[in-house]
Length: 174
Image 1 (spheres, rainbow, N blue to C red):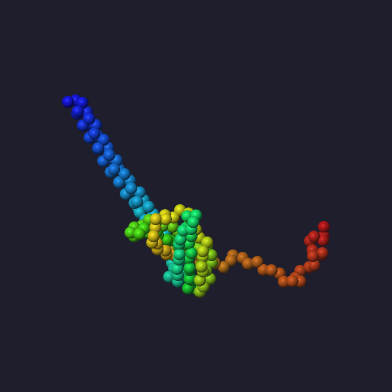
Image 2: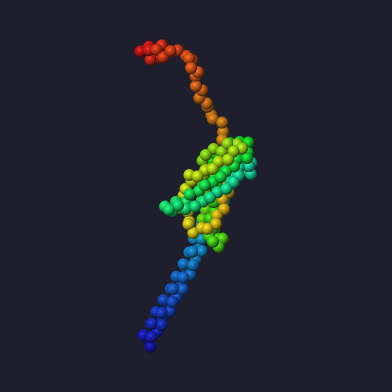
């Protein structure tokens, strides 16, 4: 009877360990999904104070994101600046969703070119390596931008014939 009790206890402990292992695995997968960019530890980016009045006037007119043969994700963004100020360094947040509409990933893209006031820009040389390729649907929006400031100083070129001849200059005295 002791030997049979031993095997019964043994199999009961094995089944208990399997059940506990499955529960721990389930809990860890739920915790890891809570810690994704859409989860507990990340928030949506907030625009800078100078960008807030311009965000309605700088429009993401269109975008196309696709994957090439090397698994690099390439992005093309069409931006339209309807404001009266030049803007640069436009940050675009793209959220990726799977076929069921569940959140998969998000990436922040920066368009570093200057977009003149009242003009548009097509920016194509943006790529990311680490984008989850299970996604099928995405949504992008502008999250921040910078206003182009006038330069701190401007270099002026002297007109031709200004100053002394080269032979009489500093080099001729030595």
